[in-house]
Structures are given as C-alpha cells and as structure tokens.
Amino acid sequence: MNKLLQAFLAPALLLAAGAARAAGPAVGETTRQGTNLTAIILFAVFVAA
Image (cartoon, rainbow, N blue to C red; front, side, top):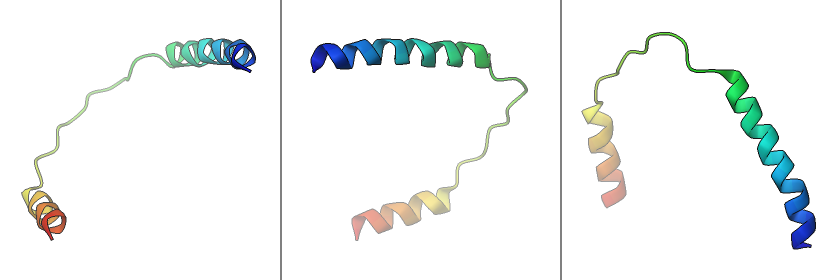
C-alpha cells in the first residue's frame, strides 16, 4: 500500500509544482490595508466570552 501511494503521490506533486511554476509571479502593485481595530476588539471580546 505504501509503495502504491508513493508511486502516485510523487508524479502528482511534480505536476503540481510544474503548474505553480508555470503560473509565474504575481503581477501588479499591491496596496496595504489599514488595521481594523474595531474588528480586532470585537473578536477579542468574542473569544473571551
């Protein structure tokens, strides 16, 4: 069972890696969003409750 899994897993991982390389780098400029303090505080209250 282990050999069979390795026989199928290795080629699948190589294909996935090839597809990721073919996609190329992210293109364009990104903008950074500000920190949403209200959401952070509400989340902290939710977790604490």
